[in-house]
Image 1 (cartoon, rainbow over the protein chains, first blue to last red):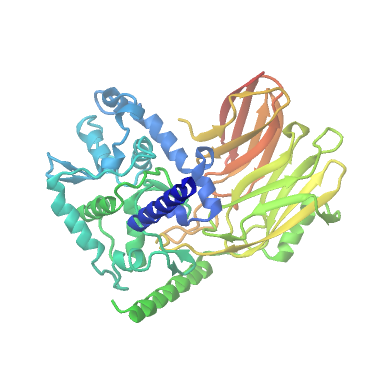
Image 2 (image 1 turned 180 degrees about the vertical axis):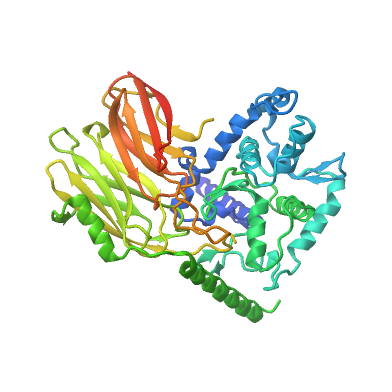
Length: 256
Length: 155
Length: 106
């Protein structure tokens, strides 16, 4: 009797596992990397993306602007105030009536609150601060805000994701949905979940943003890339973050 | 979407990616090291002494995803005492522009003859690790590394 | 501003072999690449790394352009006494960056 019960339990547990797998077939790019690249990300002391986080940590408390205020002057310890923040971006900005990504928010804060001028997109400083803020959400599930004002932008991002572009006439979906797990040359095609940005890409030999990665994809399809900071990138990010909702933040990830 | 059409499109893309890769190499690579030039660099390191195989464990991936950063580690069997220790470890390649990668200088205070770093490799090739011991002997290990191109490279 | 990430165990037992890991922010520009203007980008690499333990050199390295950007180096040393590990990275222009990590030996 006990044995039978136990077997039934085991079967039920197996069914549950199978159910969970069927429900969520999403994979982080981490899962598909070689063991050498995975090891680089797994330990902070061997992750070159942590150099960017380290620089961001210094910038967090570096005074700037006429009032010589720093991020820390208002936000205090990032480990407390910024925990979970990256998991909720892009978010809607009431003043400009459009969504802002995390880097855009940091730059806006720097410009309007510190009055130190915006940080240029993809500048080392902006990438470093974004990485440091992103690190405070590492391990947290991606949790896009339920804000109806974001819906039209997210829908626009979804449409962009399936829109063919460039001389090769490819959409994001053709590679990253229909052919994910396949290969492009020798490289495995990932499912394109933006779980670890800003991340250290071995190809860049540097830490960079999701927009820089999307730009690489567009150049790959021989499309004219959008302007850095442009609304199209933020719309795409809104859709991609929704698509990756619940997956854990890895910032700063390492990718080939 | 027709499966056959997709496959042919992907193949065309591959051809383009590979073609561009080859073009980049011809345009930007100056003179390369050769196995002969590597031999000369090794001779400079050993002073022309005989290099024996063994004692050296050279750990490096056979297949790497990006030649910009290839992790490797070297472990040499040695008691690392004042009387008997590894003095230097040299890493050499045969196809990068220069044959030398790094030369590590160790002391008995290391406790273990163990180093790790990351190297750039511009092509599939053989890499040689050579340990110089305090008794003046040289020991080596050789590894082949296959370098693949990443997708969507920076313009 | 801190430019290097150093991993040294804060505490160690006397005689224990400890692993040290270092990452230094540096482009390791090879001098073999051409820029957008078609000219060679000048070489800018770390050529020399030295680690001293209470003043005595325990490990050093000569690096070439084949070492990855943001160079990573891992090696070992015997924990002999409490004190300081000093790391220095020197580039091909002769500029040296130094960072120190304390160690407590029991």
